[in-house]
Length: 139
Image (cartoon, rainbow, N blue to C red; front, side, top):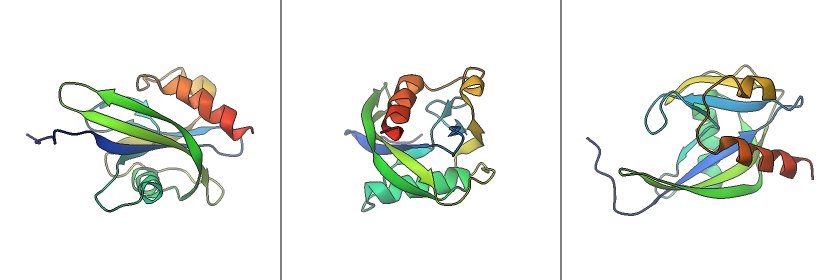
């Protein structure tokens, strides 16, 4: 069993959109949220810049290289075993979007349309933050 520190963990998430407006999502392969779909992301490692963590997590979980845009928002998730402060950013694929491949702790990775989002179980609160990201993208 993992011993969790008695302080919040900083994590990142990245909303990556392709030219047709599809969003890049991963199916979580581990707890918390195993089986749910979310944006690529994870914990920031000791000594790692937040922006580097964003690019690393997207690459590890999907194989897609990204450049980062602005911060969309931050959220806080707490349960009996975890306390995360999550910084969500916009990201843009470096090249024409490739077919993502699940890696690291992702069970699956896909580009999804709005209709497809309604057919899969999503992490709590994903849709409102997705709308914030889309609004920021249109500016």
